[in-house]
Each structure stands twice: as C-alpha cells, then as structure tokens.
Image (cartoon, rainbow, N blue to C red; front, side):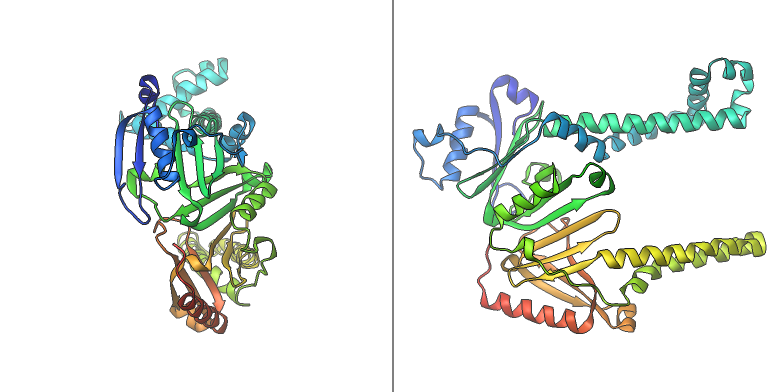
Length: 397
C-alpha cells in the first residue's frame, strides 16, 4: 500500500496476513519500494526466489478499467452520498434555520427576479419554497453523482487484475496506490451483483471473501473487488477462469417453496394493515384507500419469489436473490465448514425451512449463503447431503 506521502518518498507499507486472521501477522509501515517488491515476490514463491524472479515479466492482466468504466462505476455507485450527508449534517448543527436560509438563497439565485419580487416573503411563498427545495434536491443529486465519479476515479484508477502463479492480485488507486493479493484457494465465497443502474449500463460487479479477511479499519486493504464493474459476459468469464471445474454455466436453478411469495409478503402486509388502521382512525372511512397497497405488496412478493432460487451441482452451492437489484452468492462446497437448518414459527406454518451455510474463515460481514423459504424436505435433504459430502472431503482451506 502506498499513500500519497509514501509515493513522494519512494516507500511502501506492507502487510502480511494469515488465513482467518483478524489482524496482520506482520506490518511494515516504511519499506523501500524495491525491498517491498522483493518481499512480495518472496512470499509469492514461498521463500524460493532469486533476483531474476523479482524482475521477471508479469503475466498479462485479466481485467483493466478504463476511465469510461470508472465514470460508469461512479454513476452506478452512491459513494458521494456519504459526503453530501455529512455536509448536510454539519449544516444542521450550525443553527436552527440554516437549511431554510440555504433554500431561500438558492431560490433567489435560481429564480432571480421572481424571488426578488417576493422580497422578504420569499420564505413564506409555498410555490417559491417548493421550487427552490425541488431544485436544491436536484442539485444535490447531481452533486452526489459527480462526487461518486470522483471517488471512483480516486479509488480505482489504474485498476489491474492479474493471476500470477495461482495468486490473484489487484492493483488500484490514483493518489494512494494499493496492491492486494491472495492465493486462489484462499477465496471462500463469491458475490455477483446487478443493481438497477448496473442493468441500465449493462454491467455487473464481482466481489470475493477471502480466508485472510481483516476486520475493521484494515478491511479496506484486503482483496475484495475482483471486478468493480464489468460486462455480464466478462464477469462470467472471470468466474469460469477462477473456478474452471465448478460448473457455473450449467447450474440448474431450483425455485423456492410454492408459498414463498406469501411468506415474503407477510412483513409488508403487517405494515400495510397498520397504516390502514392508523389512516382509518385519523381520517375515518377514507383511510381505507390505503388498502390499495395490499395488491401492490402481493405483486412485489410474487416477483421477488419468482426471481429467487438456489442451485447445487455437487461442486458449488449458489443462492440467487433480488428482483430489481439481483445478487448471486455462491461458494465451492469444499470451502464450507458448517450448515444450520432453521425454522421460524411462520416457516413451520407454511412447511418451509432456511439453510445457512458458513464458508470457512470468511468474514461474518460478507455476503451470506442463506438459502431461504425452501420446502422442508428439500432443505433437510440438501443439508444432509452437504454434511455428508463435507465429512468425506478434506476442507479446502
């Protein structure tokens, strides 16, 4: 890792991690760049390396990101939202009427003579305040996207993904450069995501969870983003490249329990019924109009249940969830260390069960392999089969 000061003085910070470790096994904050590269090569070759190996030509990258891709990544992500939210939070602490003054001044700036015509009553005009607030929200949204693009460029400029001697390495950063690496067998779980904006740009993102995953402030330096943004075909190619025998393309996706949609709809229906009751108590019979949310909630639950599914081909287990924002979480069966079959009271009522699978050494904050709303007999058979297979197979850590 090289911060801006590290790069000015030609030094680097090196962290060595062990599988499943919470903290780095060793951390050298100031190391000459040539020494850092030599140490990295030494670790990669497991202690057997000569000078020629250090300077050997590196393999071609599996993925690089152009500036155009970084702009798309910034438009898709919401990294700038944190900056804008922090700014509004700071403004809220400076006085009771700061936001009102900001809206009024913004209205004068936008509407010019209209706001000047309103004079000191600009803040009392419903139309003026509404237009000023709407334009301010629009400006904030534009600012969020611009900040997101800037942060994406700062974080992922020069992104390069390589596979060198079974070790995956990622290099990125504009001002602060970092290079994270891990052996391929240390990857415990995978997560492929496609949000609404991803779909508009025909892109997806691919992340991994490694056995050497640190926690807290050190987590940002671990290997996570295999492909921050890439086309769906490129993401599938990367999965096939790293998991050639897992059968990703041939997964047979199975549906959930036939009543899963009703189970998914239950929390939302309870909320809708509470809203209807409160509206009737406050406004009388006209509050029943809120019951129009019931069919919308049922329709949404049907769509979600239809989009979810699970797959198990004897080598990989996968879980697909989401309707508008889709996520595929999967792991090799040999990387699992525990499974838990659970049933809530509602699950027992509908004859369902959920199966939680725990990859060995993976971060507890990572994407879970939580297979929900499965038929009870299917969940039980899948759990028994996985446990038996894990008992026969040596844990691949």
